Every structure is written in structure tokens, then in C-alpha cells.
Length: 307
Image (cartoon, rainbow, N blue to C red; front, side, top):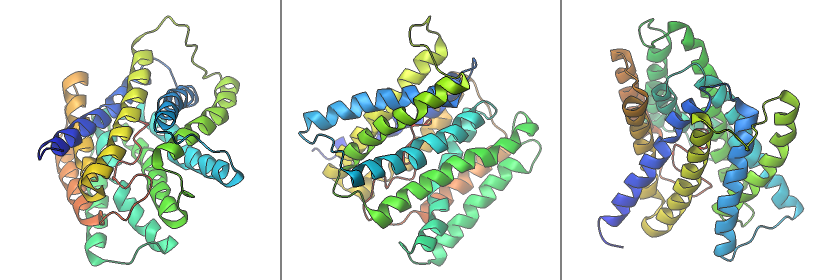
């Protein structure tokens, strides 16, 4: 690879992943809700990632241990955080959703300590403190959000970040049983679709793909394709340039998410929002450790909710 090609790939991946939060906002704009959205997101992800695993000559395996891994990753990596994220997306600006994703490495720190997969470091505690201060700037000042009443949905959005943080630590603690990350996500997508289909039908949230299609339908498909493509590109970049370099995509995802929300959704933000963004980015810098490997070492982890 040429000197600047990894940088270009990193920017493209960040731009693609960053677009998924504004697209999630569009997906819920006309009444679609979490179970229906997560089901089709899983179907699209399973199709793209499953095809990629076959082309790479690494087909999925369905041994009991692998099925258990797929199920856990589906639940903590997409289904449960997806419920929280899509619910919060109805009420919060896309830019706020994007910067809240940067809290993932900060929430991962205490979880890592509890699971014994990392050691205490004062530098990372300082990063956690900065991140929580940034969240407080979004919640406490009445002028921080366009609708102050929407601040009650920030803790709901943080539930998704908490699950993403736990997912990374789960993989660091118990591994992936010899499977590659694309294999794991492909298998998890299949299992997740199986879990959410009856939930979507029973809750009345199933989305009929026959149309007529409108903006939310296109947003859902675009978000799912962008996530699958960005994740595949991320895995490729890890192999070519290393996990430490590739993990920097987390900053770009947040910045692009805010930028796309401003450009395409016309969102504008208060001074408190920009101060919160600065604190969260600084906290991410202090908290993010040198990656040791895992399913998604980047702080955005699975932005499929943006799902």
C-alpha cells in the first residue's frame, strides 16, 4: 500500500460509519421502530457479510459453542443496543447520538476492570471523568438541546454505548473461538434476524419490504450497507496497517456523524454541545488503550445502530 492509501481508507470508513447515525434518524422519522428496523438491518448485514465470508473461503460454522457466541454477540452487539438507540433516535438530534457513541471506550474502562481484562490507570480515569463531564453538559444546561425535555433520552442512548462497551470486553475476555471478526458478525446477523423476526411480527413493527418505499426505507438500506461495507473495510485496514492505526477511525466517525447531521439534516447546536464534544473527544484520547485485538477495537464498535 502507498503511504497515503491507509489514511484515505481510514477517512472513507469514518465518513461511511459516521453517516449511519443521521440515517438512523431518518429511519425512525415516519413511524418505523426498533424491532422492524433491527430485523432488516440484520438481514442485510447477514447477506453482505455472509457473502464476504464465502468469497474469502471461510464459511460459517454452527458448532454449539459457535452458535452460543453468535447469540451473545447478536444480543449485546445489536439487538439490545439497537432497541435503545432507535428509541433515543426518535427524540434526540443525530449529532448528539454521534457524540454519545464516543463514550464507548470510557464505559469500557470500568467494565474491563470488573472483568479483569485490564489494569487500573489514572490516565484512563481522567478520560472517564472528562467523558462524564461532557455528558453532563448535554443533560444539565436547559439550552444544550433544541428540546430540553429530550435530555431524558440521553441515558437511554448511553445504554447502547454500554452494551457496545461490554461487547468489546466480552470478546477480550472470552475470545471468538478461533473465528474471524467478519465470520462472527455474519453469524450474529443470521441469529439476530431469527430472534427479531417474531418480535417484529408480534409487536406490529414488521416492515413490509414490498413498499411503497419512502425516505425511511432507503435510509435503513443505506445505513445497513454502509455499516457492512465500513466494517469489512475496517477489518481489511487492521490487517494492512495495524489495529492501533485503524482504531483512530473512532474520532472520524464522531466528527463525520456531527458533520453529516449538520449538512443533510440541517441540525445546529449550542455552545454546550461543542464543549461536550470537545470533552468527549479528549476523554476518548485518554481512555482508549493500545488495542490488544478483539472483535471491534475501535471505539465506535459496531455502529450498526446507526445500529
